[in-house]
Length: 357
Ligand code: NAD
Ligand code: TYD
Image (cartoon, rainbow, N blue to C red; front, top):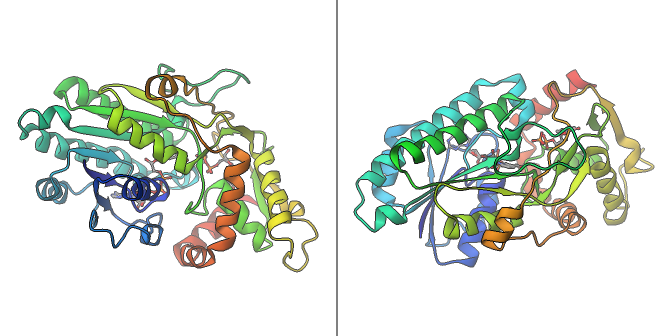
């Protein structure tokens, strides 16, 4: 396959590209604007590979996209580029409307124009895989119910509303124009190379720097955590074996309350980094309850039966093994951490958490 990956310098996109280059013979073109969340240092292990190319391009730029389609001639698009952080969508929703909705529209149109020019069987084999989130379903109030592929959409935040919107566009381009699309909706990912504005990397790095561990509200909100490399394997399986027009939910079967997750991180740090910063007796002592996130979704949990039965995918990593690998990775990659924690990152953290505490 010749795979055009958007957002390949981000957390999940870089895991997808590393997976494809290391484990298959496919060619990849990474199309990424390099926002604050994009980091080419996450791709060092593939950057010299002749099957990998990079283009710094905004997916809202239609003429640049047309040129990339005509030059690279992809048979597969994996669309991950997005603004992805809920808290940022609350303080500045416009970037989410622009990239997640308008950008997806521009990419769909560029893909449709290119796909229309293909002869059979290339046009039949073409795939547009849209990577989305379980947050489009809103939240679950019960303790046992799960999101399935037919759960009605009910997004709560500007982020999830913009992703829901992009999912609808993708399905409309399939139904109306016949573009061969597939959609996946995944639960919360964690793992190496995760930008430290999200819960797990933020807590690991704050603890190591003796900063407060800010828990929104009562900390009882539940997320279903999936190790990012399991997600990358699932995405590759879907794009190579999935059925056109279908949706697949992807999840980790690892439901945890936020406070539990933070306590697990503290315990792992006690074991893996016992020499604590001055003034810290126990990492757990840094836990600080702060003002809740507006519109905070209470519980997400995925029913991943369809992808298991139809494509034979199950996660390989348990939360315990995956979290240990993640904490070890952050302890061993201080250079990557130091580079992402500069400039724009400091501005965000100061703005977000001064208001909170
Ligand atoms: P991320 O924020 O780490 O990375 C996003 C990437 O997109 C960055 O490299 C950024 O530079 C790029 N980008 C942003 N705007 C762009 C634009 N206009 N043009 C080109 N590139 C642009 O995000 P992530 O966590 O890797 O998420 C990837 C995708 O997976 C997103 O679509 C997200 O909605 C979805 N998803 C994420 C999770 C999760 O837990 N992180 C779970 C389910 C689904
Ligand atoms: P996050 O990693 O932002 O992912 P999402 O909002 O997409 O699920 O947050 C995960 C959970 O952790 C969510 O319930 C909000 C909570 N949270 C905190 O309690 N404190 C924090 O500082 C952050 C960033 C998140």
